[in-house]
Length: 128
Image 1 (tube, rainbow, N blue to C red):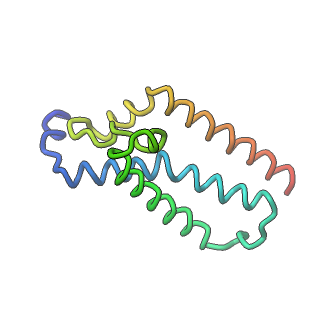
Image 2 (spheres, helix red, strand yellow):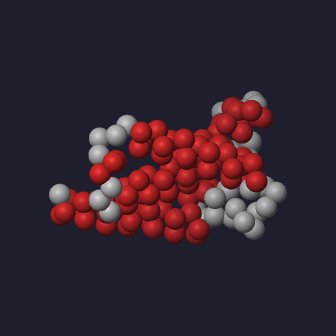
């Protein structure tokens, strides 16, 4: 059944899936951590401002669009941001995520993000 569904996937649908996965799994954590670090460093302009969420969303989408646009042409410069598996049409959405997670680079990125966010959460909770 998954093979039939993936065979019917249009090129546009596959491109949107790849862009969304790049934005959510690779770009969003980077900009969310940056906003969290600014808050942690005492930037009081971020307190209660919905503009932070808008910034993180737009920056993540723009970052993902740049990675998707230039990643295939310049793989040396975009090797940590562009994931070719996200754009393989024969894979389902869950298979794309599974294939990405099994790469050592992705595992390192996920562990780094989890540790960074955990440390920042502890510091934020202890500082107040």
